[in-house]
Length: 183
Image (tube, rainbow, N blue to C red; front, side):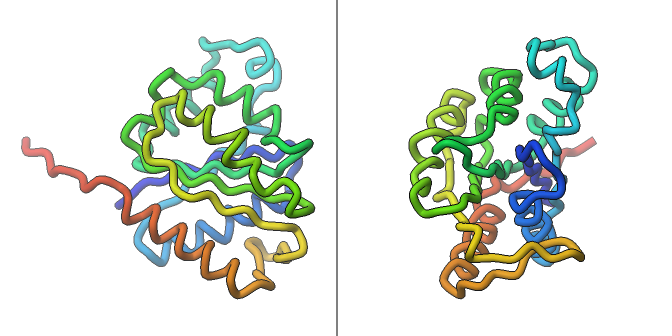
């Protein structure tokens, strides 16, 4: 089964960007993929802020990312960029943590004014971490969806729904086939 890790980088919980990942989790499960959601906000703040590479919690989170077949990065956009908590976590990943993995960036924001935050703020950092297959990101404006109390989202925009579903399908198709190991 394809193992996908989603890095949820909202400092608050519940959040709209987390709800988007809950929806992705449902859709990916229907495609036969497993999505684990890694809540960066639950990592020890001191370990993130002081760049403690020897932290057990940081090492476990790093292993989740490096062991994944694909990665989704979900972030709200603040001041035209991804969250600081995401930057702190990305700084602790090994230099080539994303090599060979398809990456799907997803961002949520209040207006279309921050639409390019994925391309101009997030993607360059992902490239430094070895990502060479960064899929076209999905940007969701808050007015285009509703967070459901039961988890997930309801999309109000049919075009966005198509883009979101297509991006998840493209992600699963971009995962390299696993070569069976013989014992």
